[in-house]
Image (cartoon, rainbow, N blue to C red):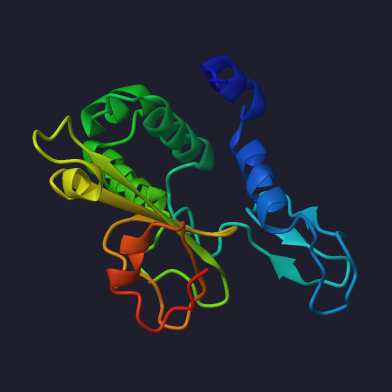
Amino acid sequence: MKFTIRQFNDRFPTSDSCLEELKELRYSNFICPKCQRKNMLSKIAGRPQYQCPCGYQASPLAGTIFNKSRTDLRTWFYVMYVMTQTGAGISAKSIQRETGVTYKCAFRMMHQIRDLMDESGGKPLGGNKIVEIDEAYLGGVVKGETGMAAAKAKGGVQGMVERGGRIRITNIKANVKPGSTVMIDQLSTYRDLPYQGYPLH
């Protein structure tokens, strides 16, 4: 079901509501490292931070693309909303017109959001998570060929996903950590692919 602009406006009317969303995402089961109290954070007036009764402070923006940005948080959320809802894409010039930020700011925000939307993060998958892999072959009918011979004549795409983690569609050997547990189907040709060092299931 599509998340409409009206729903967006109702859910995120202010920058504080966006900050609260980040707080819930990052600190939903917060245990204070100083006093060990659970879920006792309260908003600090006029600052994008929360504080425990013991005085410990936590910032939902720390370590994110929003940290130290002079652009208000709701504008960031709106740009993310537009970029994820517009199938044909949107230009930085359009973002500039819709939000009132400079073109340079719009371009920078879109670039950072695109990097964020790359769920793989550029690092190999696996480690302590199981990686599931499957393949698809793109193209029409290949004359004179059937089965895997026909499949290999097409464009092969392999998708990898960590259970409860990141997603990648790319070359396998360079993108799965050696020693990771890899889940595949029973296709015999997988045994010829470069999985050496990976327990296969």
